[in-house]
Image (cartoon, rainbow, N blue to C red):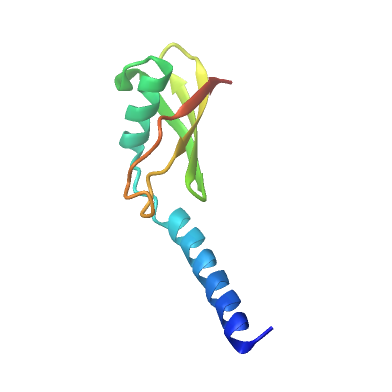
Length: 96
């Protein structure tokens, strides 16, 4: 492999690693944003949904919710980071 090829491989690796860490470390979603989006996906008004926990891995935010009537849900919110300019796809939610 030529020096040019090696340089290209190294630069691509650095950019890919930098973009992945940038995507996960720049999540723009507030707890209120998550509750608002996921409440609509499960058919509840935001006032009846409590965010139990959240974690972000890459471009996905994994959420656990509890409704006022005691039903637990898990949701995945894709996006909401710098690379997606804060935009998200519709959340995917399921009963626990």
